[in-house]
Image (cartoon, rainbow, N blue to C red; front, side, top):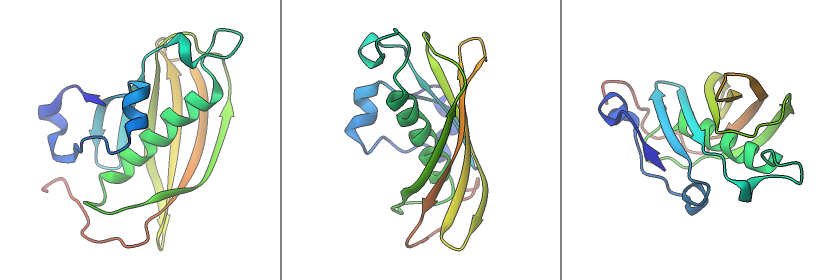
Length: 144
């Protein structure tokens, strides 16, 4: 993944751990406490028979954005998605952007809302993810 505006977001930036994210060409655009904005450039190899993004590619973008948002809370801690719900609203035939924000937590579960937009800010999909953090470890803050 590439990251723009590194100086603004450096405190939360971590290089990608999953080769899949590089394969998709994901770009981290903005990372602040509990929030991430990630771009998936349009690629015809990730389309369905109708020429729009395949739902699996959209969910991959959403899941990655949610994970990046959660990574602003914890340093060097493993976590994983336990539940994902996505509602598709419109086709996407341009670059798409995921905005993910932590909306709550309970014990070791974190709830993250995700919205997917196209270049014109038209809503493509929205949903919620639940992540499990088995060992919380050191919590990250803006101060580092």
